[in-house]
Length: 363
Image (tube, rainbow, N blue to C red; front, side, top):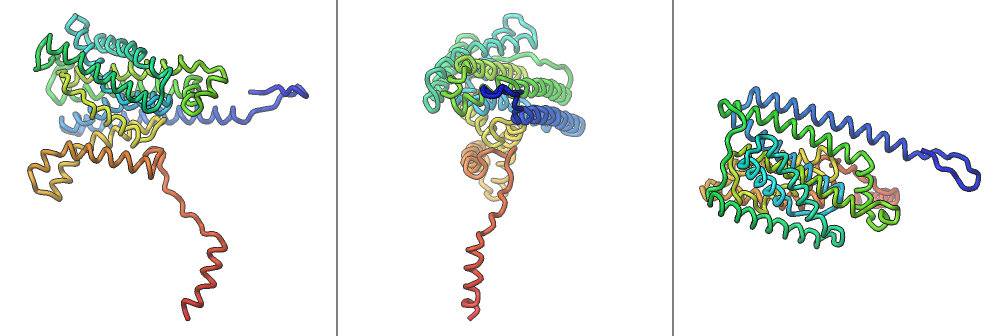
């Protein structure tokens, strides 16, 4: 890349272009490294783990898909959203509707993702005029609206029991869990490739410019409205696909499964793992998914009360909040970018003062 100076008309090389190229290559290497690690982990656990262990791996893979989508919206795009559970529920319910209408798997899941893309476009319209806390409240309103619509659809169709779907894979429970692990790994790998491609290109630079300096981005000619809506549509479509996969994975859909706490847990994933990174949402998904599993064991080690064990999920939510506060203060960039702070050497004047006070202390 060169710039023509007005005075001499000579070409001046810009060093930033090389830096951008290096960053792009580094991102590509990181992308394939993450996918390779995920493949090795899935191969190991499906070969040696129990059905419950593979079920946990499946849950982590599902959570990582949604965390990557939300990180694209919040971390890269800078658009605050706490209503991601609304798109998860919408994807699940539209998948159920498409399946009951005769659409086979995975086309019903794709229909759910497309419907959530349209819903993301509608929800993203307020982002053209509001931001920050007000945008978060707008997405919260979308969550309650989706919860109401889903509850009404379920009540009018099947009642409080919820919807039940036929298994996607045949075989024993262990074989089904292993098949789900490889399917979810493929979806996660496709999501990683898509998100990294978007971040490394023109759209990623535009989203970060809008996130950091929205007024300057508009002055520079970046179509702010289009990129904001695009971020909402893409992230909502991915979360909708996650909701459809979740519906088939669990085999049932009920409105009481999609709570505000679920939205908070996904936000905790990207904050703990690190915003605007590929590895961050995956690390956060592992940490947040494993917390409810390890919390009862930790509670039983210190408290031998049955009531404490029953309230383990509530304690896990408390730990979510504590971890969010700790990482925002001590490691605002998350686990994926955390580095121990080097010791700051003291100034020479302070060292000299200590040396001068040393004889006095000995005396």
